[in-house]
Length: 374
Length: 124
Image: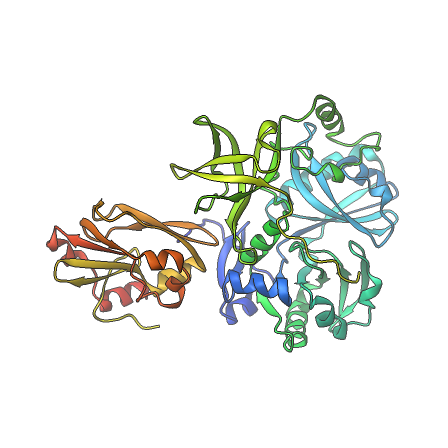
């Protein structure tokens, strides 16, 4: 229950607010972050039924611009950025030449030749070094690590729109899913993005760090009548897992490919060239040998990250994420398994700390919100 | 939440209620707050021998799994099956939520347990 660290942890501009609110703080990816305020279960249910606020300022931002900015992004990012309009975003992969994940990222097209990449906190330095080097052949383009210029606040859940709308002149109904707009929130300059990592409708708001506290408090005030609550990274993880959103370090890493992760849709197959393309095309032609599946426990146990999936007493796969979900109230998870074990309802055996427990393959996602107005 | 004076405690944040040669065992309020929402308890069967300092089961929250350590050696004579199906009671009533009762066979081990004053000073 304790953790030792030799380097001081980074603090977001909302750190003091979290501590003052009684959040439980833990080290995460080099940052001291709130893991929970009132309990993961409460916060998870708040997001599914009302709305929750998340400080995700630890996420990194890397911007690429220049005459050949598009060519630079096209080279390092798996998805096809030429299909993005200005004001639109998509999920993509930063891949090795072997087609495996250095990171996953959101690519925002800020202007025709200006892109903002939102990357995982744990990977910012690695990504920035890689991108700086790899965009050189693309021509006239430069990249900047602009992570310290943004605080990032997510408001997620069915009440997200009505919580945010009173604080901004931007017409939120005019922002489609995976689009963004520039404007002000609580008088702070902001980029409002209709994205999220919870499986609910909602917004991610980029604001200058010096304004983050004002925006955070304004959102909490605005959401008070709807009982909108502050949430920690614990609920963010259980929410994204129910929605089967992949997490870097769990479902994706430098040993797994987009095809294996079921993320073929973030690959721009029509692009003539990008790092990792040849390997992915070859893997697609040859066929994958293992794939990410969803499972539900049959026995009373929770299968967690790293637990082996066994067959005839031998390890044949691995659990990437697993928990007891507060909304569905089931023990669920995702795992890489050989293709023979991927059909729905296939029984899986998982080694839970030396004891075997039964699970079965179920469809992903575990949770999908009912379609609302968009 | 205050810590009952009639319980003994361990540095692993378990409490023990010693009654004659029987020890009822649970986890403290501090432990449940560290764990967060408890969703699953893996407890031994009646009749199993447990050894002081060794794991007798596990407690799982949404976030993580932690071992439960036997504070005293002996034989499990009762298991709280009700608690296994209501694990959230560990969060709502930690000092009432006993998990197992052990018939202790090394009574001297009780002298190594902390009293409430010692436990509260451990928490700082």
